[in-house]
Image 1 (cartoon, rainbow, N blue to C red):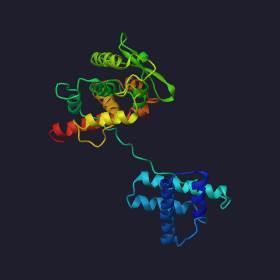
Image 2: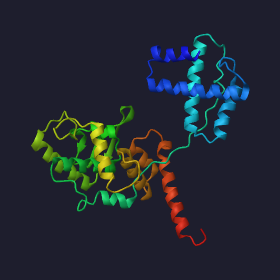
Image 3: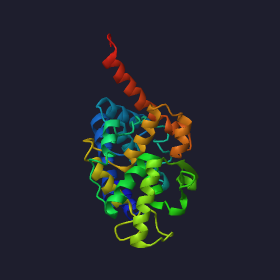
Image 4: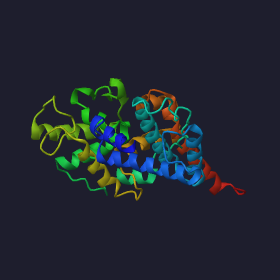
Length: 295
């Protein structure tokens, strides 16, 4: 049945070879477990108790929950296929509950690293258009907390200098207003003046453009952020989202209201924003342990 399942994934579902190989490995791992523990060869005759035992076996052997959940998902797909093919009458994965994934704390820059990033007397951006644009990209991410997609889709008519705010369209096509500070306004005006000199005031293009005046694209933004973050931090993650996380974490550390941060980030629920409180708690815990005489 595994061969028929692979054919189904290949020709009907049109999954990639890499994905299909992952399914095959997960099923082979499950089959090996069944043979060693229960002397069972057929995957069609097992019940949910055997699957639970397999999940427990993985947890006892310190397999991470993400890998376990992926293997369970592979089994679910396989048994749905058997049910659809009328090879079985009941899906044994229906009673299986996947282990909870531990939430990863957002990666952010420490304040010293952020200060170094925006120390324009030392950080060499260059005075040409590319330098102005790269500097603006970093300032927009850290100054507003916007997402990569929001920066790319930002237009000049969404930037309201007189009101000191920008308008972005976020997830679910939701519009939100974000205030911008004086330094960011100056960078926006300086960049826009140079952009108009080189390419004209084309309002249809993205506000942030390439060296040729074309719409910006994700890889250019990633490369820019990675380049400059690499000068101030050794941490592995150096993405635009790190600056978004840094924006939120630093606001919270300075006493900003969590609901206000939620609105600035464009989160649909407070639960998404509350993850930043864990970073703040860890910082407080570290300060306590270093400062308290009996810690």
